Image 1 (tube, rainbow, N blue to C red):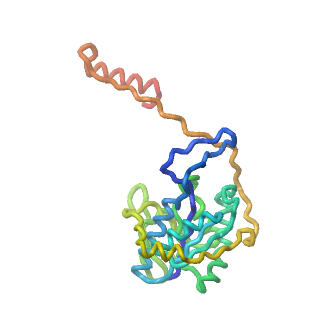
Image 2 (cartoon, rainbow, N blue to C red):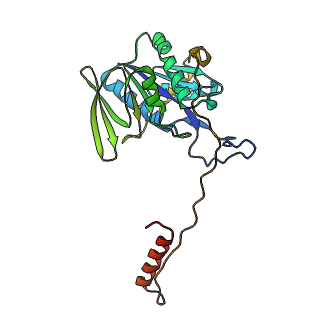
Image 3 (cartoon, rainbow, N blue to C red):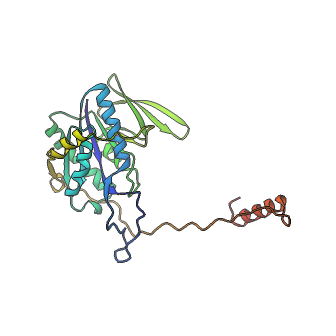
Length: 263
């Protein structure tokens, strides 16, 4: 089984990021870039599939030279090959443009791999701009079947059986390969690299494909502005007292909710 995992490098989402008043965009000074969390789940699921059923994993990302660090992290936890799709202006691309570049890169990655890919894994969304449409747009551009929110993949005749998480339970769906799957957080965490695997990944060569050589990738959306989410106001504590027993406090709470139009 030949597997391709697309990942994205994003600002560390554990850091409280503010807007830069001068630019109107996020102030990322001092914020460490990390591999998108959902993409680490995709990498882990791909690795588990490879360990159980055989195959090879190729990982690729669009970005500048700094994104090589994320590729090498994946090489240290199960990926066999890594490619950088070089684009220094990646932050100016929307989901449609990124999906176009990814789709156009697949034939070149397959040529370098020496075989066509059976499954393409992506995270379900990115933690910086959580649109959640890049994976399905990629599938549409490649003309492949796609399933979102997949928490398990198993081999099946002619393809794979995937377990999809829904709000009301699970769906088990058969997909013909090649196909695309997008991964949320499963019920396990990504593995940690060993010292040996980290050392090996550090020495690995990461070939570069220029995004400019992959054809036009027009953006279909435009960011008109960004703003920080409104800060939550402090709550109100309603505590029964001798002067205001519980029945009166309850009536006052209901009145406050009715005034706020939350009833």
